[in-house]
Image (cartoon, rainbow, N blue to C red):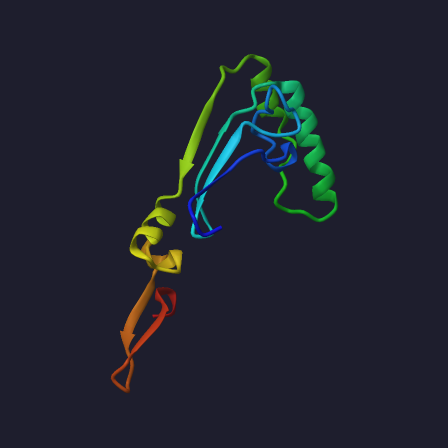
Length: 138
């Protein structure tokens, strides 16, 4: 996806913390903005139903047992807090580093990240040229 694109109708299994769509429970109330193959924004309504949350977290455990280390763990403390009541919540995450990379037309996020240990450094080589290396190598 190169052109700015809104991605909608994500399957429920992908984001266990996002709320199901009221009309179509197999999809989430979620969207992403992708530009030039990079996710710039992710937004969704939070799941606040403790029963649904427990079922979905348990479903994630099955994927973990199959070797998927990126799945969620069962968080009983979090679910217990939900049982006391949570208001409807929604929000979005803006990838500032990705937005800056898009605006400055750079390929690597390392070139725009604000933390110096992650940036590339340019140093002069013995033959008079420049060499790009990780600052950790300096």
